[in-house]
Image 1 (cartoon, rainbow, N blue to C red):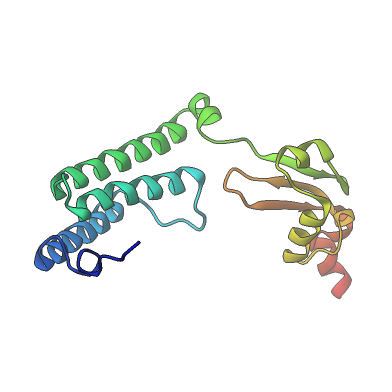
Image 2 (cartoon, rainbow, N blue to C red):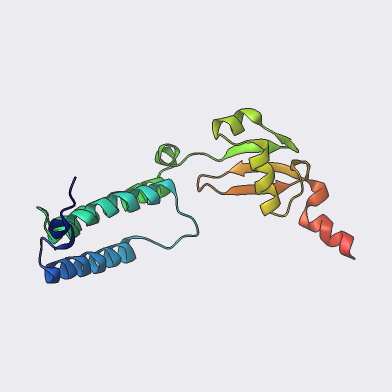
Length: 172
């Protein structure tokens, strides 16, 4: 099989058109995301989905095959508007929030792993012990409750023996 260096290395479109398309798509996406999206500490599943779909839509606008830059930007705006609408709906309606965001999942209660819930999320005890160490905890025994939040982060409620008020009292 021979390699066709000419078709592989020679652009099929004008270099200036590629630069202009890339510039318009970058600036357009930057503006759209800056206007519609807030900065948050964590990327949720909805945010990740939006990024993947936007990347595909942007590729169509930058490649130039049969899609115009305008069509790609309209598609991106449509995707972002739907994402913002679902965020707004989840904020305004507790009924809708139940469908749009997973509830926190209890993984540790009173120093004991809840195996059923850990299996549901494919988490092993070793995984959980690693997360505990990341948060400065030596074992599950120090935890009254541990939740896997809808953001994908873990939140911990320490048992009375490890509460910050108790530790401050021990320092005196």
